[in-house]
Image 1 (cartoon, helix red, strand yellow):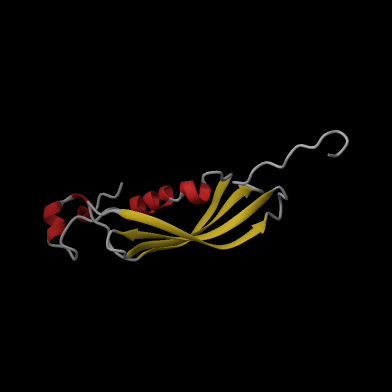
Image 2 (tube, rainbow, N blue to C red):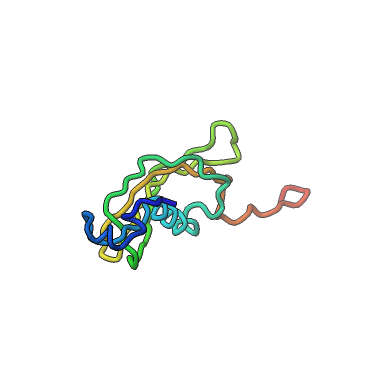
Length: 126
């Protein structure tokens, strides 16, 4: 919780730069990460890191947020050959189409996550 009055006090925020209460940046970050779970990390073993977290525009109470991610690269894990590392950039976008937050992360996934299991073979190899 950030107790700065720009996040908690409407009177204080009214006289501040943006004129109203701002949503705490770490909450915005958490919400946007959560919005990507179905598409990016729902089958992940772990989110390995987050980098280049950029808070680009303020978020206000009542804003609607959307998230979109772009895959930057995919590679096999160096230490665990049955796993892969996905590198993505995610943007949090408000109801006006403005990017309010942008960040990158590496996600550890089992190889073949999201794909159908290989068909089982009989004992004679068919």
